[in-house]
Amino acid sequence: MAKIESYRDLVVWQQAMDLAVSIYQATRSWPKEELNGLTAQTRRAATSVPANIAEGYGRESRATYQQFLRIAQGSLKELETHLLIAQRVGIAPAEAIGPLMSRSESVGKLLRLLIRKLSTD
Image (cartoon, rainbow, N blue to C red; front, top):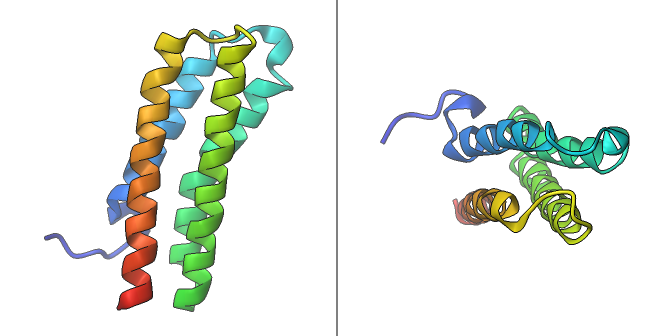
């Protein structure tokens, strides 16, 4: 297993970054009138996930790190909700939302594992 020397080495951060990029790509086709609404909120939630993982990693205490990981989890749930709203109101089709939801769930599992690991070490 590779040594973790930076938050950039964390698989959860890497996957969260990939998810954020995917969200930006997916929301490019959303209606222009949503640019300051659901599009902006969705993008903000998506970028908050890797940002909080990175910020928490840089903190001095394990408890603070875990708190930032929990904030990232909250942002992930917010992202999923925005995606489901976009699907329900017809902004994005289920075929576009499904893969994004799967990626989000994968990041969520990794976040839970990391939080658990930090709790037991």
